Length: 364
Image (cartoon, rainbow, N blue to C red; front, side, top):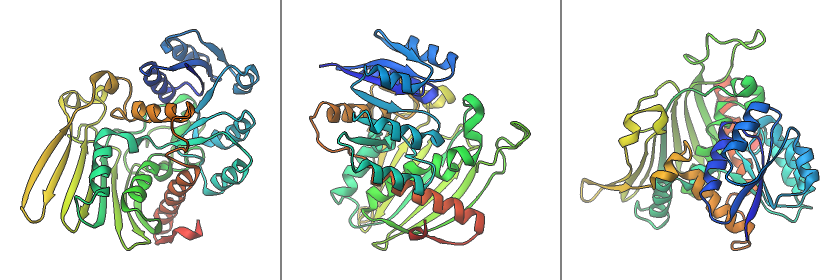
């Protein structure tokens, strides 16, 4: 059985999805919908089989030629597209964030009650091989009882997008929703608890300050410190800098428990840094009793790394989603509720950064 995929959106991330689906046995991109002629054509050329293209995704839905759909359109379009796709009653993979606001996420969850087909939210950072190993070790108790989690992401600025949609909070939900929903999801998963309070200090200091679009200057944040308190008493922290390209590790994700600290170290995309081409992800164990570190290299097949900018996570996520579509697993591993939580925390962080006060998540 070959599963026929339809993609709504064919920009940079849409093309990453196509390259990864090309690597999967039993998957074929059959249709692409995007209003931009150039992106639609570039994406069609990437697909390995016969493909139909549409300027309007509603025409693709009417053609009814797909077994599953992937939403890869700008963030602020997700809510409306999801509502239209629910009528098709077919498996959906929706790129993060689920929506740009918790209100829209809740509306999606309410309306989904009458839908029989599964929806999976694309929190692909869960599926990065070094992060998978980190979560495996944390959940089996290698670190002892997890108490703290920190994530440092020092990376390149937001890339140009069609229509410059990712330059403005009104379309992205804000940097701490758009970019960082992955991290709130990982923290909630690793600490096995829901967030209750968020405090953020953040600003737009360096990137995009000399850009204007229709007379408007971008308002997206480019650096932040964010602290999260969880219901079970644990804590998380994010250190984000988006003008730090060239760092040895793009992400360092650390969980510290009563017995040890475990770090997942992830290089950035090879196309942005020559050093990253030679860098292998690794897991670092720092044992309290032994007072020493142990390093475990995390190798990923080169063809998978070359298919995208997220260290293989898109491929491994699609592997799991394909199993869902084929009925080999019964429930999405990243649910609509997971998508809601990540947006709630991001919204709380954006509000905290604006007001200078800690925000209770239950107010979002």
